[in-house]
Image (cartoon, rainbow, N blue to C red; front, side, top):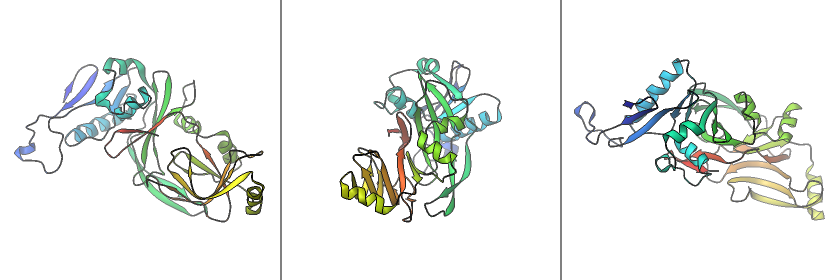
Length: 304
């Protein structure tokens, strides 16, 4: 480990052999990683990317120490910050077209991390069945990157332990709390539905709002030619969320609206299937977000 007033670095020699023995599997020997940077606002920006051993142990010790301190900090993969900084052109911190001094000046912690944790979340399907899942979070937080604000969090609808995301908030004002930041991702129609006590479901960036629209009503509009009925419809251009059954409005007062029932699945299996059931139709709407970045299995950012 090596530290200056501004940066904490983990550097592993090529001849790394812990306790005099060779390591089985991959190690970080010969690698150097920036684990933390002190920002101009005094906060500590910690690199949440995935590392091989023993850098991962250095990273965990750092995060644990910060959690017991009273210092403001945020744990965010530097790959995601690089992607946000370059509008998705570069998603690898090692190829970032900016340096540590730029990072210190142009990034600040708006809402600090609450700490790395495992948490149990309740998941409800379209038939009202509730199940529980355990997800892993780096500690949700909000950052400013240049003149934009980003929510760093974990989507519990992602497979396994959840899917990390770094999402641009469509706002010029810094959100005061994490709750407000998450609410900013919800379109008005979703917030209104929740205000009426409806059980709004979600998979990734798509919300499903229960409606009282009848099948006969939808099919009548299909016969009139203002809507189309589709099986296995993929949402969005080049999207990956597939509706088992959908009705899409092409004209009229509902132009642009999408109604669905059955299973909402991810074509790349990155999200848990969402069973909307077959008894009612759901209005499906996209979240309110700018650019959003997720992490691949290699720990590099992907544009979403």
